[in-house]
Image (cartoon, rainbow, N blue to C red; front, side, top):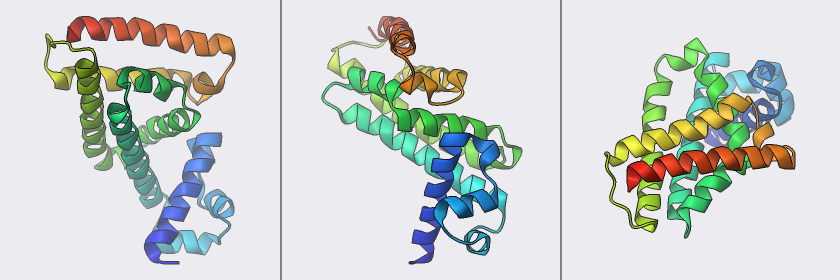
Length: 191
């Protein structure tokens, strides 16, 4: 296994562990156990927990940006946006991303560029929705993208986990109702 493969495997293990049990569960030992490797191997790839957290944050941000861009490329980007809110994986990853963004060592340096990339992905999705509905935006597309991203993040961060995505039918209906309310406001700005 190459160094890059080893690091990716550890970040994947940290993602699974963190999405399931929260950022507080992310000790070097716990990540090593999740990956089925020694603690020494984790420290070989990442000098300390901060380096691992930064790598995890960057990967989660890239994954989020890719999901936004994939939703934009979907044949029905409005519905793809709704599906993002119900995705267990996306919601778990975003909840972990939000928790990591509150860690001082991650905030210093890694978070600003990652957030800007995610805003770019959300702007692409906003543009796809506007195009799908043949609207003429009243505000800059970047502002629509920023609002869309804050909506997605806000719903996930408020839930604090992936519970909103995989909860009861009542919780799913509440997510849909909030989506519908926000989508109407979005459409008013976009058209």
